[in-house]
Image (cartoon, rainbow, N blue to C red; front, side, top):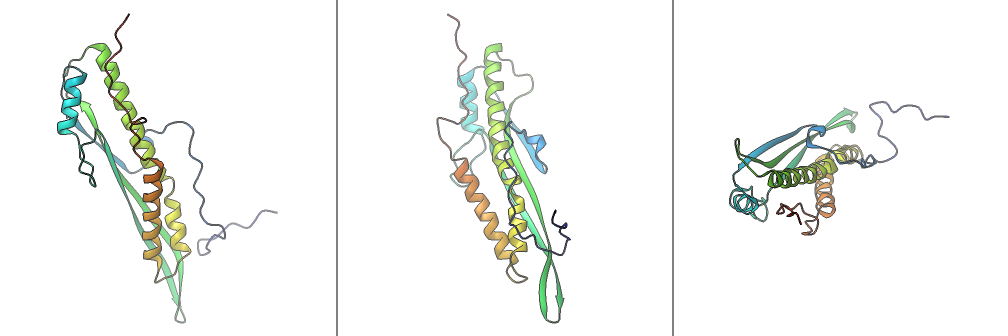
Length: 193
C-alpha cells in the first residue's frame, strides 16, 4: 500500500535526496535563474586570443587570478511557522537559487581562419559546459537546504540553512577542483600533413 501524500504541514520522514545527475551535459539556458553575461575578446590567432583572455578575462573573486570564464550562485531562504500555546512549529520553507556566469565571445566582426574559429568555438563550448555543470550541481541540490530548514527549529532554521548552503559550496568545490589536465584549453589548430 502506498504511503499517503505528505501535506504541506508535515515534514517528510526521509531527508531530501538529490535527483540523479543527468548523463548528458546540461547547457546554461536549461538551468533556471541563471544570468549569462559576455565579455568581448579580440585577436587574429590563438596566441593573440590567449593574450587578450589573460589581460581582460574576469578575475576569480578569491584568488584574483584571471580566468576565461566564471560563475557564482546564491541561495535565499525563508521559513514559515505557527505559534500555538507558546510552541513554535515550522510549517514550510522556501529556497531561491540565483546564479550568474560570465563567458568570452569574439568581438563582432572579428575575422579568424576557419580552423582557428573551430578551435575557438570548441573552447568556448567547453567553458560553457564546465560553468553549466558547476551551477547545475548546486541547483539540483537546493532541496537539501529546504530539508535542513524543515528539520530544524523556529529559532535555528537560519543556522541550518546557512550550514546547508556552506556544505553545498564545499561539495561543489570538491567536485570541480581545477585540475589543469581537465580544464578547457584553446589549442592551435592541427596542421595538415
